[in-house]
Image (cartoon, rainbow, N blue to C red; front, side):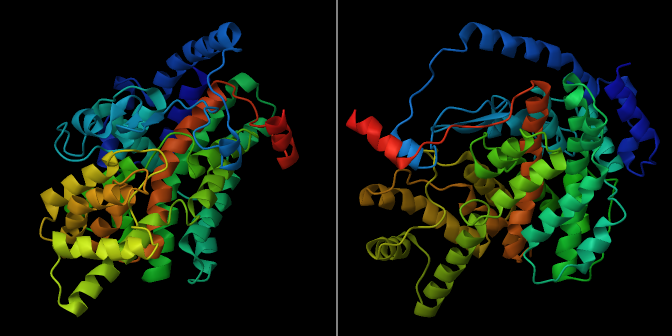
Length: 466
């Protein structure tokens, strides 16, 4: 048995699993570690062949607009786990969101009956393979076994001022847990480069496992009594809901959906790219993903959903105060007033997508199934029915369709999750799965330190003058 499997098995044997998932014998199925161990040599060889035979092949050109404008659409990153298409949206290992919903295991065990388990998507992103329910349950058991935080982390979180932003606290909590990094220790001990991915995987599984308790501790400290109660008989998302203080199977399903659709959005988004960049220096996964969290905390990235929710609530208050009904006519009138004043419509448009974001669509379908009569959902749905046409007529918006942020806040609000300053923390728990799945392959494929070439304004002018 290879070294990686032995370490994983011994780690599991050291802990007593109170979860019902512990009853699944992980030795009767192909484990996550075994699946990855079989894939790594083949992928390494393929990448070596690609570089050797076609390394000089030109795949794109860079314009001055792209150089100045944040490298938008420049093809210069290798990303295994997902791809974002302008027309069809995100694909996780080649599967669209509806396809994932159709084939990935669910909590009930009946494929397509409910939302996918986050564990099943984690398996898919890491391996490129759709897991069985037994494999997904074995990963649940392993994550539960790894979820205990170092003894100093919760006291540190308890000591932080309540007015400190939850994302700041999340980054602090994750960095504090870095004391247990297996990758950092292995590197210091001089482990061979070809074994980096084995130790990176140890950290990646632990980071994903520990983030929910860090996040829940922050939530309970800032908004409630500070008490966190686990239920390891549930899956990853269900247990996270209990730690947050929610005990509603419908909300569990929403959290499964929310966590799954926010995991990955190819490598160019700020949080994923930051994780990849920091990781390329051989910082361990704890430190690498803390970089991703800090990028996610920016107003142009992870804070968008709370801003959309505030806008929707203000719109509803305005209509209520003026005695207006929420209908296509009143929304159209308001939209034109907004646009003519030079303002934007929050939640519409995307840097890449040119159609309705599939992440919006699946949340809309969830709302139609679970909360069709919610007033805020009705408002969002009415906006959706008229806004694309208005923005097309306006003619100054590249993508007149809604993005993921148009809907997520409204769903959370319906279930009483009203602390929207905290919403980005939920995003942070989710995005770890995608960004760290790629970080595993960064180390398995031996990807180098990321170091693009910068140029000066004078150099750009010299190219134009030539």
